Length: 270
View 1 (cartoon, one colour):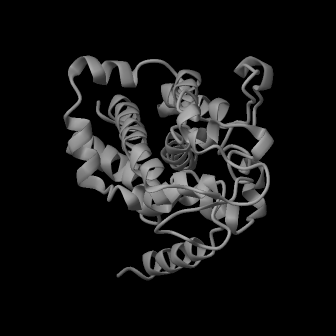
View 2 (cartoon, rainbow, N blue to C red; view 1 turned 90 degrees about the vertical axis):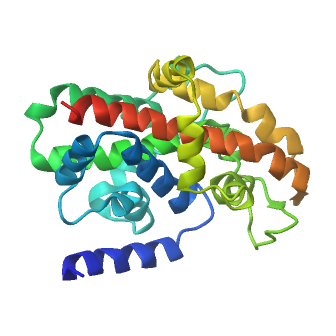
């Protein structure tokens, strides 16, 4: 293996081993699944252009979790991105009331808009915008990354589960990782789901913008909180809760892949 790639892979493994169970939408596994599925949905020529733009240092796996890697390693150069992963909005608020330049909605839309001027972007800017696009397209589809600030997007809700009784488990972590494990969701599962969508369904999934996608994710918050978290102490989640929400997680991961593929094909397929 190329020494630079080996170092990068070791850095990723060390980083992910130390990731706390909070605020990392879908976890590393989910982000990688979204990107790999999206790359499988575009033409081989477009995929090669995307990989060429990422450069030799970043394969798609590393690029998918780059934003989490620089965040958990507290790399000063990128500290300005730390709040780009989410939007906090209470039930009685609307996006215009809480919109700012440091949330996931604004920055996902900003990066997508930048691809309209792709030819004017430097190689480094194109590479960074791709890494941001890869990651935020996943973040915005995780309902708790578009959740309530009052419980920090479910990070303040301690839970236990029948199979995954880990210390410090939170509702946010359940939606990041546990549902993916519980549902045995892998790339083939997502590809099958995506390819099973009708033309009309694909059009509906892809249409709109980052604001629309955030609102679609928030529509699942009632299902997320159907476990009725306790105000104090730990809430015991049931298998019925987990299994009932696996289809939501599978759908949202698939939607992220479809939308990402649409953007990549549009700007790298010609």
